[in-house]
Image (tube, rainbow, N blue to C red; front, side, top):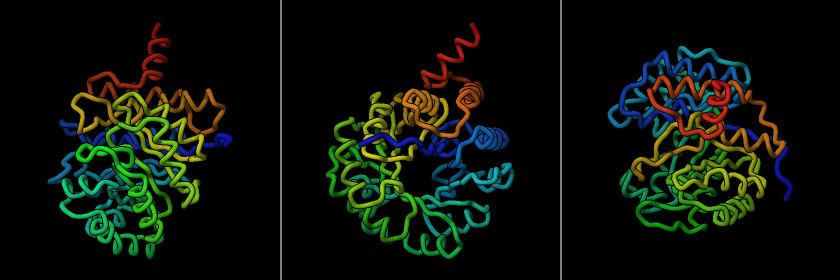
Length: 302
């Protein structure tokens, strides 16, 4: 199959990238991060999370962030909403899209939220119905689609089962997420081919972690199945909670560098993204994990 000529990048650093940071990132830094990403041309920014601050203290200022960002016309600002309380917060904050999340692994679902996959998705029914009634987009994320820290391998049929459930709920987009970064290209091709056989590829996105250094290869494998949407995080922000010291989200700069080499259009200002990654890493007082970003920054400084 020919590769897509245009790809949508969902920038997840303000939410998925920062949520595991131990030290609280000041609200004004989060707002500036979202604004700089919008200005760089990202069509979709995952800006905040409306989960209990008891569970994710870093995201406690979600409403404040959403209230202060400079909204760019045409940009989709997404927020994570686990329940109706989260949805009400998202609605009040004028989110464009809500994100719900379930796992393809029963072991992961039981361990993390003490219920089965079917029960977890049933809990989202009123949330999605309310979102649709309010005219919001809905994205459903399938975590552990390529492997689970508790049960190991995850059957393709389990991924398809969640995809079908999300489709029936009315999700506009469905993320196939390699939560712990264990996927390899052959498995990605197998899973994405199966998912795109039952759901329009235009509605499928890939969320790959780089824990084992496979993320770019996995994105290329997914591109070969026609998937046109990918999640990434500037400077590779976002550690993997299941592999100590390992990188989490694939770095946006690295994804953009690869796509540019493949003549795939994203509409994003690559140089601006390199600047954002370096700026954000400096704010967190450490070096970012983007190889392309760090190489270009070093070249500029030479």
